[in-house]
Image (cartoon, rainbow, N blue to C red; front, side, top):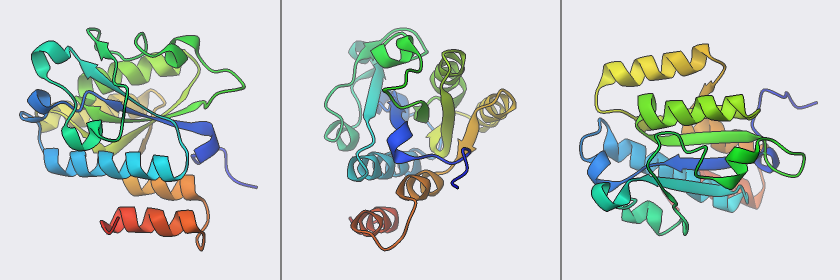
Length: 186
């Protein structure tokens, strides 16, 4: 029997938070975070995991970086830091006909990602924050944001953990595609 602590593609959805040009310019490790968000989105597409994204005040902060925008058609704008009021599924909470595991990536870890994670927890979702696909302007805010989330029941994961848990088994066409995505050969 598979552990309930693991992610599954059929029970998950991916939410990319505010990966916008003007915000990213001030972030630590921005290239690695963009790369890992791309891996997550590509892997989600291979495994048919629903993908959402948001943009914080795009009029002033610009749109989602082109490499991600090309893969995510709809990116609703928001003014609140949390994404939970912006996405219909997040407001509705968990229901038997929709994914209940939410994988979060994006910026800033200690603001929009954290507030979204807490709201999703309050609405009954299992929340997983991808530590290597999230960042903040400074290391202290990032580290304390992750610690606070972990202390509150959010699962901290990495890009590879998510992709391999979603994939579940080696030897399939999906596994081969995921392996190419992870190694950068996709």
